[in-house]
Length: 185
Image 1 (cartoon, rainbow, N blue to C red):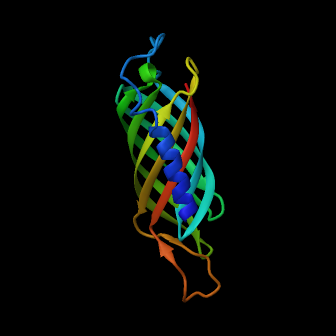
Image 2: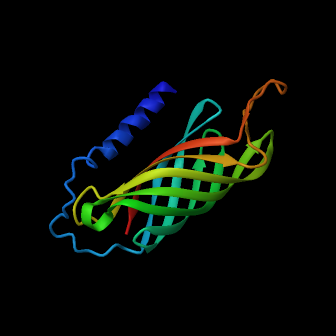
Image 3: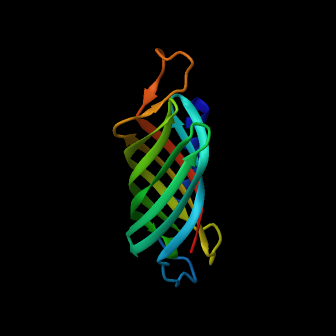
């Protein structure tokens, strides 16, 4: 757990490294308009029931305005068999993608989670919040990289640890996640 938190803190500090160094001036040649549609995927690292799970996250996003976007996402964590599909809203508040090649955002998501518990599939709604940063690693690229960290709460049935002893099992409704992805435009 300490190694995961150290890794998350390291990646978050790298994404904030340029925030305090920038002098607020725009980069030369940054006259492009922000695109409307983004699509791509991410490696999803989930944490629940005191264990780490790895999966993928596919996303389609529509940028409605400079500071607002809505999207659809589908993800799966492979070891625990946790699958999810839902809608996302992002509020962009820091930076400007086409001027500074980076943009910070807050994420709010609503999804349905499909989990196999004791040979039956449970479906539960989930609300999630998060913080992330989009950045263009190469000037004039037609893609961006996204780092996001968040937490979600499942209402109703949670995730139950598959244990041989049916009287001693752990259950959780909280899932934490960290995504590293690429979105094309």
